[in-house]
Image (tube, rainbow, N blue to C red):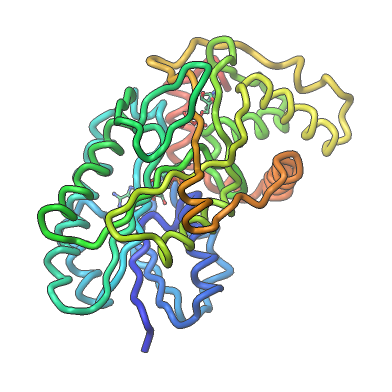
Length: 352
Ligand code: NAD
Ligand code: TYD
């Protein structure tokens, strides 16, 4: 018997795989049910080390399917949900917004509905919704997002995540569903699908291809090591107050162009290439439509109330991240072999 049966959606994706690994290893008395549709962004190679664990189960299923969701709730007597499954890439959301609305809005609604229906007893339950700082819109040169910042999403991705956050709060207010929400800044680390900035740049450096920087590279992101995000999720899952929202960030802002130069320096050094080799291939390409200028998080609520702090020195963790991609070329070619290449060939001819 397990203390909790935790449905973790999107556990085969980038952040989900880190959360699943942390929870399975740290809490043998919880059963983690990884529920994932295995879209282009999800794969089970990332979780091979957990296959023999007694407290880990994988279920292939789609959060937008009422039947799949009902079945997993019934079969595993789900007591808690950590919801990460989503379409997560802004550029894709610009090309195909409906896929984002379906997965992120409808999928979240299906899960909330199932939780509300199944949790009619007196037992302890929790619906933890993992969201993004992009729901708050874009900052100028000054200021940071916090839990009071009004929502102002701009891309179809961020608007779909904002909608899902609102639905979660609506179920809490209307049906007293026990919920928490966190809104996190950009993550980096191992196992990120190679379409987001950091793995794209590393891989293009390895392959001696142009390094695409949108616009002038002046946009700013606040980067958090994915394992620190997973620790924050663990901390909020156990100690967060019901109905509350927590902002998570690394206090680590970088202009895209400076970050790309940093990646060039680290990767050239690790590959034994001359300094400046990679940077010579930086190419400023057409800017993203509606490109948010700057994101930055004030995580003091989480730090002061729940005593979570980011642990990683950025230069060290970035070097460790580059090393992971260099050492795991097989993982990369395997996850890239499907939809990714067709999508890139169709939409980003100038970047490959
Ligand atoms: P990802 O794209 O790497 O992984 C998403 C996972 O969800 C994949 O395993 C995919 O197969 C699965 N999935 C997609 N549609 C599904 C469906 N219909 N049914 C079941 N599973 C489905 O995403 P990520 O970067 O790991 O992000 C995870 C969550 O964290 C998302 O909700 C995202 O909005 C949020 N988030 C991400 C970041 C970031 O920097 N990556 C920052 C803050 C918040
Ligand atoms: P991304 O990793 O897609 O995350 P998000 O859009 O969710 O912040 O992009 C990070 C930043 O890098 C963003 O400002 C867009 C920019 N970018 C590039 O300049 N080139 C690229 O090839 C990609 C994918 C992103």
